[in-house]
Image (cartoon, rainbow, N blue to C red; front, side, top):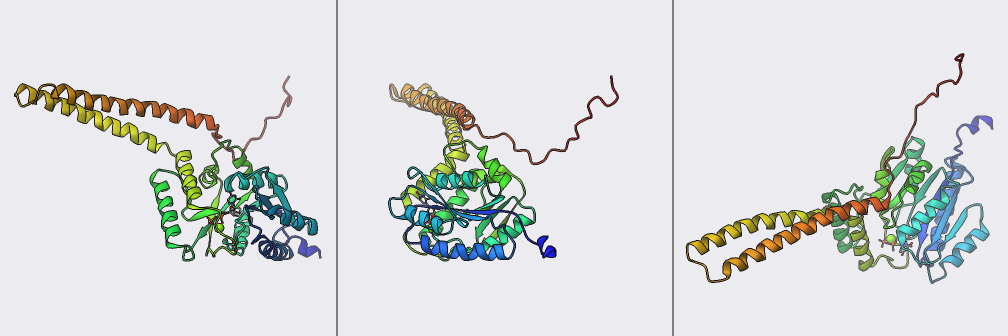
Length: 333
Ligand code: UDP
Ligand code: MG
């Protein structure tokens, strides 16, 4: 038995699954997770202390009853976190991560609806054992998505990139994070959560694992278009001040154009081509407009700074310290 010991991992995995009105899929999700976790434990890839942690995001249906029942039947496999009210996917996920990090060495976050391929977990855990702190699940294809969902989602990733936001293409929130990566995440204090944007900022060694995204097992999407748009808007405004800078640039352009317009209006007046009152009218419209946009842009710059400050994001997360403290009083008086 002793020879076996070295092969077995004593690293504890928590799988965090946010659930909002998922009574239809939960029993099946739990069944598949139980199988998967048992297989991983038997193979010695994760410790027996590993758990599946369901986070109930203020569902009005039987979601929490099901979670509580799962925990009652198998407390050494299923855990539950119940939020006081619906706070949205991202907040529910964060609540789970922050609860799990106390006991876990690695955490995988996953949707409840079985769209994320459970078998991709193996690759993630392998990567973790190979020293990666963050492993992003990336969709290899979107063939199961409707044309509309695919078009809007991929457009969104491209827009984010264009706005200078560092996100992983076609990665949703199916990912593995090591304990220290989640602890790093805890340092980000912002209220408008867009985890896909924050996680890359934590740093550490990362890699990706590809998987084919399936269709929702049961029930319907909890992300209707309205929520999707709000989420996309949140993502952009939380990570980019480019929209604000755009106002400044437009203001500058309008201001310069207004100078030419003024010149043109004066020349028209001097050469006698202008109607009475036209010159001053043109001048004031363009000049005032330009100055206003410019001023708005400058104010925007400052608001951008205040905005960044109020988030109190960590300025750094230290990965490793090499330091041998000097010996005190080694022969010195
Ligand atoms: N979810 C949540 N709170 C919400 C909305 C969604 O916890 O307010 C969860 C939901 O239960 C699921 C995950 O977030 O586990 C992703 O939602 P969904 O599958 O409906 O989104 P889609 O895959 O359609 O984008
Ligand atoms: Mg889904």
